[in-house]
Length: 149
Length: 94
Ligand SMILES: [Zn+2]
Image (cartoon, rainbow over all chains, first blue to last red; front, side, top):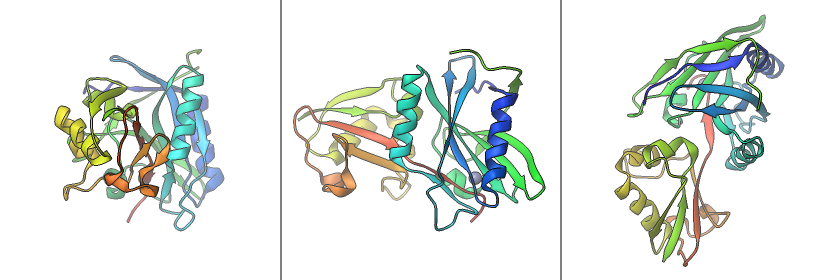
């Protein structure tokens, strides 16, 4: 599959970073709703979710199947799709860990924001390779404003 | 039994871009096997190398989690809907 850049507005990117700051030093997570086509992929709306890994929230996150279904329902209502997921890496770089790779789905965009005590650092997006061997970076194309629905 | 299997969005590119697939299957194991026989590329995303369903692959039979039924041995009846639903997990490091 060819990979087009992930288009996302500055305002939505800042909301992902703010969520990571809010839950620091725990990981935050949420769904990214938007549109995907052969030539473009754009985030239209975010759905912040609770991190269900109460046992290890500093270095783990989990979105349960019922939360996934809720996000899909919300996307259907908006006539878009769940195109990916974001989460934070408190005190760690914005690149996928081995644990991330083992648990990843193909096709989705995985946005990771690195957060430190002083605030958000890098924000990067990743896509799992078809053969699951690694993640490839996905270019984030920040746009001034989201496309309307 | 004629059943319908719902494919989650991230796996549709590997299943002819279809949202669902109809097939004959007597239980969940047969339904998933039928799916990966038809669409070979799905196999590595649904199963780990030891042949077990991956932990983040959830299967519902008519909205009931198969883990609370007979798991992959759950019997299917005509018209049943088998849904593959992702859970999403990850984290910063081991
Ligand atoms: Zn991670």
